[in-house]
Length: 319
Image 1 (cartoon, one colour):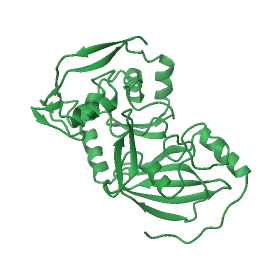
Image 2 (cartoon, helix red, strand yellow; image 1 turned 180 degrees about the vertical axis):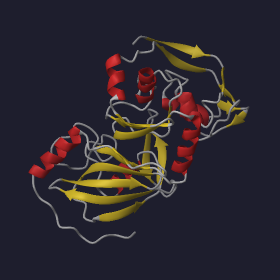
Image 3 (cartoon, rainbow, N blue to C red; image 1 turned 90 degrees about the vertical axis):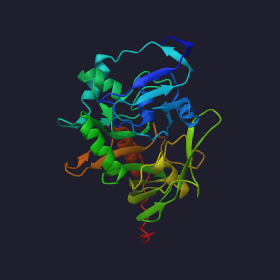
Image 4 (cartoon, rainbow, N blue to C red; image 1 turned 135 degrees about the vertical axis):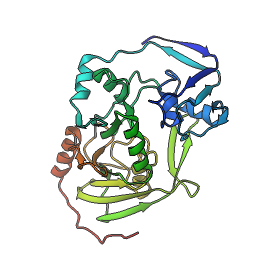
């Protein structure tokens, strides 16, 4: 993909009916191609993004008719990489639920949910190309290396309704995770505030901090191995990298995580990627939606079982 650096003059966008309800950061991700996410967040923090001449935060929701102003920035002018028919059909084959307003896709590990920051296209661009539908919007996001269920709206009303449910913690999400070491408690509620921060290179990270936002994750042990544990984790708040950082905070970082706890000792079979899979969605008014453990994680679990050892359960924690 060819690219050239250019200076962009002041840019104006007007929010239409299909974009209303979106967060300003998500809105800009899809419109400022070639601008890294870290740069977009910096623009917002430095008040170089205004909506109706007012300062905004990353989570600010847009309304029909809003005027969005972005100050001049330098960006990479890139040629759009076409989504091949093979990729498009592959993504369509991973749709596990669809009705007139909602689509749920079992995303493979390694594909981002949207393009930008050096990624030519993501899940949402691939599905738009595959379906020919102009209005498809992400209801939420999961990390690029995480596999599993992603909700996508086909109607603005569904986008608003389900995002409201997420904000009110009415949708229960359950992830399967393989973590390092043997987790002693069968069940525990990890209650640790999480704070987002930025590395010198602009990459976003998260750590436990008393200055962070309230964050809780329910952990249920499914199976213990000699060097690892299979856990089902349900985040009761929606923080960035929540399951990964909460695992690290109790001494059990996720297997295959190159950001959090990669220096923690692990003698089990080598993983192909981050061992985290969004396996179940429980949405009010819908049947439970599930995606089985992907083959690479199934293979890892089988290898761990072959190494034997299942530690007896200890008491539950009610914290």
